[in-house]
Length: 505
Ligand code: CS2
Image (tube, rainbow, N blue to C red; front, side, top):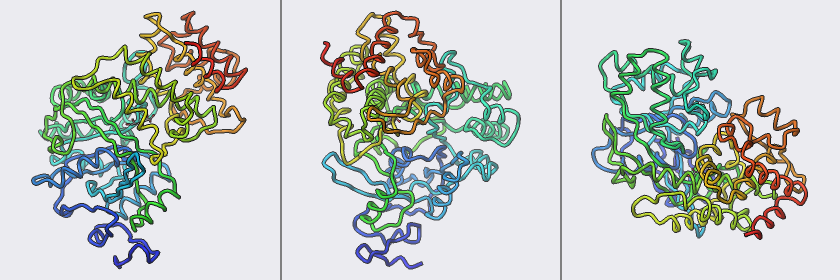
């Protein structure tokens, strides 16, 4: 292969182990010897977020001595043409890809991440995945399978054994879900007296480690009670708070960034410069020196999860629906609209912060300001449809505790009611100018979809499965604030409804 192609010649260098030594100065490359690495971590769900976050921390670890056994084996569960194309690209590029980070002033820095040394596409070869997860060298399994992917029924707080893919895995078919793979691999490990791996959730769930334990142990119990006990007693499930905004990368943006680095990378990912990972130090089977790589190992992770989910993620959701209705499609553009920026500021200051306990050393006011300025980062150009996606799974996670507390305490519920009224209107898929946007709600049940589309129940969204447990439709004060907000949006449009909300202090 000819690796001698350079920026300026118009030709880009293909990315693989063979070309790593020939990359230009515009990009940093791994300084460790990849051929000496072994996979100690398997990651299920290798999306943009994982590649811009955990893989970066692992890459830093691999630059330290004694870390050869901690590389990553990526595992993809998706069975779509796009998922297959991604698996092909990982193979072609030897698991290598570029990460470009944007500072608030627009400065870009790019580096090639070498942490992922293997990639297994599970639907093509489930046995290979089971073999990998049963390998004693594998000591951590981490997950980004989305907030809805844990199959927890919001109302009962239990793992939904009847979900179709879970039921198929439990019936003894080749696994399709993360739980099917993890539990079968743990069974093999138990049988051959190999210690279990630790399981690290990197999704934005409340108590994500405890939730993962609940899901894995419930799945195992449905197979074999003894196995469930073994996993519960021997495996570790550290809670962690993960944070980095990693937008989708469009084809033109990828081309532009590739032209800058001189690398023809089909898997280029981007992120803001900010990154944070706070994790409990509970790894029964060992871990890399995460602390040296910038991970904060602390015991008070739930407090961090609380502030991150209820301030940052909740504000993302609160921004996305009214902003889409106002006609915006990018986060930083919506933030230039002072109404929307004020809505977020007041929501965080007045509705959420009084309910939170700050972790030691953290100022909630400073945290709020940082969230606002991160959303304002124009270079990141995050997409509102990305945030709006799967609101049915995400809103309950990030907003339920706040909603519950505001209603119970008789506090001001107008911002919360306006938010949910915007969410209900969002299902129409048309903004205030009459322009259409796509609505992606993969977890919405058919029954809920029908009731939202019929439009006969003015409180429909409050009665959908994810919100039913909160019984907001039964709370007179909330229901009437919700109806008032829906009416105002209907009559005068989202902007004016928001103006009225903000004027009325
Ligand atoms: C976003 C998150 O998906 C979402 O709704 O809020 O992806 C967010 O960008 C990250 O959690 C930031 O850490």
